[in-house]
Image (cartoon, rainbow, N blue to C red; front, side, top):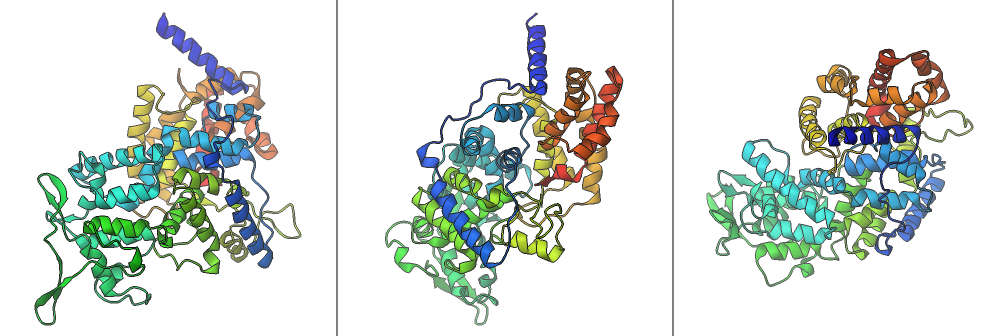
Length: 541
């Protein structure tokens, strides 16, 4: 009796969602906490962009509708599209500053910490395969997820990473150190390169062997001095610790001798404490409030995660602070530092900015009915952030969207174990087949024919949309008998997060005319298949 009752209750909830009534409690803050208010920062940021657009004679795109912005936020913070259940709750929320409060709702959801830790973790511990590496990396992501969930300041997280001691399984932060093991020894030079790339947004690996060819700021002595901070670090049976008697030696191949290199930093020497272990001194220097590169690096990465493209690319080759072209980055970094370096505040600030809320269709001068610009002109608009960039979704976002579209209710930690298990294993298999991007989180992506075929004919895709007793396509078909408009509208909302246009309604609405029972379920399945394989489904827009 109880299982049957649960099924009936679940079906009623599905019908309510499809019919346009919200289900469940709306766990959205009634007001935004003062600590997360970023109105002043967003205003200053918008003023900078407006001045740039005026100077370059660019009219920015019109604002996107709020449901589109919600889709962007969900993809960036959860790796999936909003569920129909969430869309209905969003529609029912008539309060002021709705998007700001829903940004907070998404950040309060455990899916944010889980997904964002995976994204940031690529720059910190990489994505190399191997059973033991994968196990340790999972432990690391669980630790990083906890730090993000509790909104630990970024400088505190980085300090833990650089200074951690213990076993990688018991103290997961040490995986930042142990990932640089080579033949049982920790490679100081690998750590030096990863540290500067991840935390300062600079690529100085070239200086490992010689002075940087293209950037006179970085000398070989700079690289050696940074590597020397990690020389005492070792991996023993008790885990990571420091043998403070060990010094960093560099071989001189010309005369067959070696020389000792003392720990030193390439700039800001006055920020380096005189006391403490080498790794702790390095952490203090990295996170010093005067080290502007530290804040700019993470601001640029988070900007890239929200837009799909960093403000300045590549993320590990940032120009010096203070250059006019990156003033927006400096502005955000300044306020990020003033707000305790909390990543949740930073996300609020970026999400509240005008560039994040612009439409993906550019303004075309003298032709308000057109959205087509010459390629060169479109690049100029995109470079000026006068239009929200069209970016291909990451593989895990594509499968996340497909899995969520196959469920009217939100897939989260409260979902049935079977549903969560299908998402976990389905996502792993799909990403492997689709093609993982590896450590290059924010590199430009191109679509491939095998990827398109996987969405069209992959086994998981077919299973997700096939009619069945508890399938979404069947639920929609049955709940909208006699209302073809509502049926098509619901399909579009579930798959694309929007309603169909008049042209789409005229064409695809014909597929539903006079359908009943099994024929209607097949028609809805065809609509889902078409939307899954539309260009719009696999792009952030």
